[in-house]
Amino acid sequence: MALQTLSKSNILNGNVVQAADVSQSVDAFTGAVGYAITLSGSFAFAGQTTGSGYFSNAVTSDTVKPQNIASNVGYTIPYLASTGSTSALYYSAQGPTYNPTTQILTATASQAVSASQAASASYTLYGTNNLSVGAFSDRTTQTVSQNTSASLTLGTIDISDGVTLGTPTSRMVVSKTGTYNFQFSVQVALSSGANGNAYLWLRKNGTNQTYTNTGIYMQNTNDKHVAAWNFVVNLNAGDYIELVMWAQGGDVQALTEVPTPGVGGNGNVGVPSIIATVTQIK
Image 1: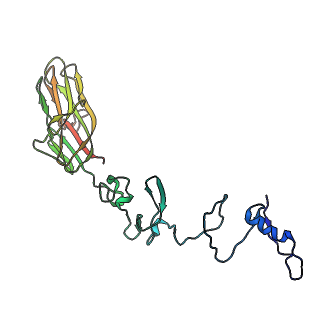
Image 2: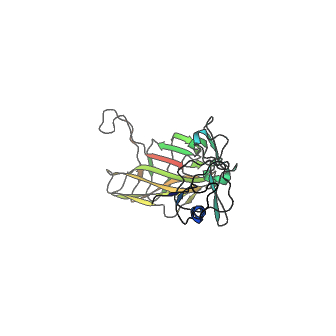
């Protein structure tokens, strides 16, 4: 429906002002009739404003200064804060700020969802992180005798950043408290006996971890299998984990194959007996 226009055509010196000349203003500001109203100059109001529709013009506020993040120097990015059952959006000095010169987004602990997301905790600025990681392997064949268990040792350090090999080298030691993903693969073979099983499980600080065991069955000494899975485990700084293997039915090996130029699929690559990675995820 087209909006009506306020008119002052009859409001002139010497004319009798009619009721309709006045009531149009009342109708416009009470919402009884739709009028197109244009304001100029400054506009001050108090109390609560309500309505529907939208503003088609730009509105500038001295309190809220929306800024493109790339030029957000001297202003803060809005943030949501809660007190009891009340939440509100704030634009104050407490909010995170962005400096385009250094390309650093600065936040305080009050803006962090949890300590692990704070700029001063597990995550650093620029979106990179300082989480720990270790990647290890072994290039020797390790034999576990029938009806015995042994912690599998690691002889090669591929990556060591916050995760190191201890003494003995079966121990993977973490330097930071957090949650870690431990992933491994072992090429398993039966070295004696008609058939047998290899069981592998996780040991933490010298204690076997309940329900981490899995068995691999081998029909004869020609069988080779790859045991590969992962564990997610909480560790404190200084804790260590080990991969343990137990042999049943015969002697079992974590089997390596050295690079052999020109021989089948092995080529110049070689097969490590064990691959183990420890990655901090938070």
